[in-house]
Image 1: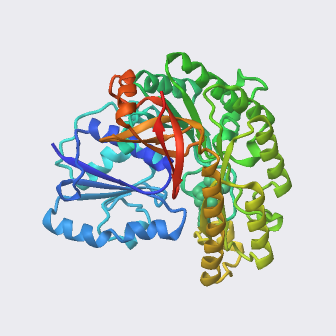
Image 2: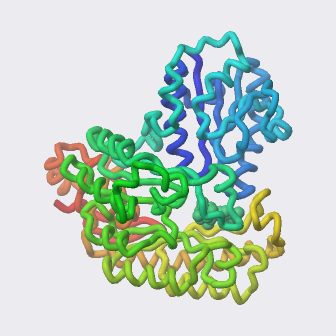
Length: 468
Ligand code: 5AD
Ligand code: SF4
């Protein structure tokens, strides 16, 4: 049996895609190996959001060269956001990446997964690939995900759309993943139901702009959404997911929403539905109106502030986190100061702060100057990270002395780790006293939601003890 090894980079969407790729490779008769040296096919599922992410893949190629020397039959495939054209090294029209990576055998666009079998045959016509019904694999979303990333048995990622129509000027995603397409509601709910039946307690719905679900130009012609009439399709989906509570699903999260699609209807649903948690990751990107405009983020900080106020009014203890880019084209000191001020005002509890990285082919690449010096980008990044560190620590303090409900992910000896309602990592010890109490959970804590009295915080995590 040939073996495969997948190495995934980037966002949750990529990890979720890799789970689908695993199912496909197994259908082809491949067996998984965690050891690259033993693999017959190595698949890199790549990210191209920043140059650093691409460099990580290029950095692997020296090792791959050596592996190929030891095993000439080794096939190397690259998929994900670095690929524009599915092809093999023998295809008449090859992806540009073949010019940069000598070791590359197969380039595969994520949505072309069903072509992988024929590309493998182009490289090695002798390889025995069982005949599979390729029509079953045509619709990417119909390929069942293996749902084994992070080996989690408690929480799963569920993609509901792919691609992006927003075209922020700095971002490669609309080019790498293409225009936004939503998955059928029935397919999503079926997968969610199966996950729930398999014991998953938490599902995170994912999409590039997850809350524009059902609203893209493709979706407008889709009869699937017509029947909803004036209802926001994303809100409808959250309501349907909430009904799975009866079957054991406890928590539904979503990532990442776009501020322009944060309707009042959605905020109301977040406040009302029992499976919705007091947590939202809402990328703002900059706290300056001029920078937002140049980024083609079509909202102002005043509008963003209004959304947060509404959320905090309806869900008073909600945790808000965000994404920020520092050093975007032409960003002045004053504009960066505005971002710092806004960051403090919004009291973000966590953030992914990135230094702007020019991506070939984007609007910023074609029409703007990447003119903030690297040194300044780094200084701004450090300054904002310092603010973030203070805010994150402060945000943890409010949980001390209170009970958090923790979905336990792992148990190592007497130490358990999981996430609370607000998505904070909580670590707690099962003391002898609580061990007796934990017998109530028939000795198995992972996979359960347990009350934990938070007693302190360390770095980015909360600490506590089991409270039953
Ligand atoms: N440079 C730096 N950060 C970027 N992001 C997207 N494109 C770029 C880029 N060219 C960040 C944004 C986005 C997150 C996924 O990555 O903050 O929300
Ligand atoms: Fe990129 Fe903007 Fe789309 Fe997010 S919303 S994926 S940043 S283009």
